[in-house]
Amino acid sequence: MGLSDKRGYLGLGGESALTKRERFARFPWSLFLLLLVLASVGFVVLFSAIGGWENVHLLWRQIARFGMGVVLMFGLSLLGGEKLYRRYAYLFYALSLLLLIAVFVFGTIGMGARRWLSFGGFLLQPSELMKVALVLALARYYHDRTASMRQDSGGLGVPLLLIAVPAAFIINQPDLGTAIMVISIGVTVMVVAGLSWNLIIGSMVILGASIPMAWNFLYDYQRQRITTLFFPEQDPLGAGYHIIQSKIAIGSGGVLGKGFMAGSQNRLEFLPERHTDFIFSVLAEEWGFLGGCALLLIYAMVIVRTLIIATQANDRFGVLVVVGMTAFFAFQVLVNIGMVIGLLPVVGIPLPFISYGGSSMLTLMMAMGLLSHVSVYSKQHGRSV
Image 1 (tube, rainbow, N blue to C red):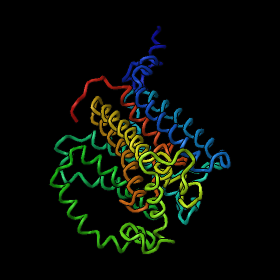
Image 2: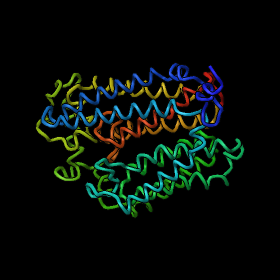
Image 3: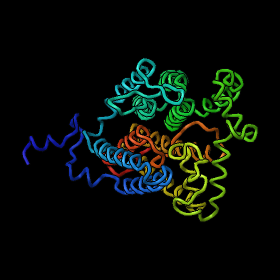
């Protein structure tokens, strides 16, 4: 192989000399297999949720989105060199923030909110991209700081600003659920980066004390969702309808479920948003408690596999990227299932790889591609953060 050929396998910065074959060998194939299983489960449940062949075009569209996501995942994981995403982390954050701002000018309104940008018929939700961009920006920021600087309260301004600005835009769309997700992901990265426990405890105290004040800034429908969490029976045909029907569907599934496409709440269309936010209720009704536990087990296996990648990362940036992307994935699972079983307010968070949706699917595959990139360029020796 000549010198020019060797240079073709180097990263953009010349820091890595892995060949294409080596990159494929280092790719986390076990993680990809788990995602393939999750997506396949999602296709089966979605087929039932949309009423079978009546709306099968929605299933084909979801399969196509997953196919695009696979290409995106492989592209991001195998592209460039080890330092590629660290180099452009702030640029990606800035572009994502510009898209968020563009929503207020050019955004498409749907279900009473302005959250999407339309590109030739494809709807993009910039707030989903921001989840990934925020992780990259915070990982870059903390990578460039020493251990003492990471615990310095004077250095909190930049990361808090990186979190607060997009969160403020997202809240005003309005989309409280996604804003909470963005804040949670950002705080997780900050904690793992070495934030002082004194600051963490102090912040929790301040946050708890500010809840009554924050209540006054919520929209009426957001307050209603919170009160409905505790008292859904007060408005069984209105605000409490979703959660009541969801609980009925999950409870009626029992241990083994009613069988594929045999769920009464789903088939008789009592269950609202059954192909998006409440698709777990469809799964639980048809496949029962054991089916729900099986899905949770697959989710747990994905999380464990990604955290193993974090232990093998070469530097702090890689660790924080993997932890941040894992938090993104795990929080969506936690919030979605928590809301459909009545433990959390209904905030419109999709179930990863199961709920119907384009932006969510592609953003999740993007996150998996970025953490797979860390695995590809890992030296297979865990290092401390």
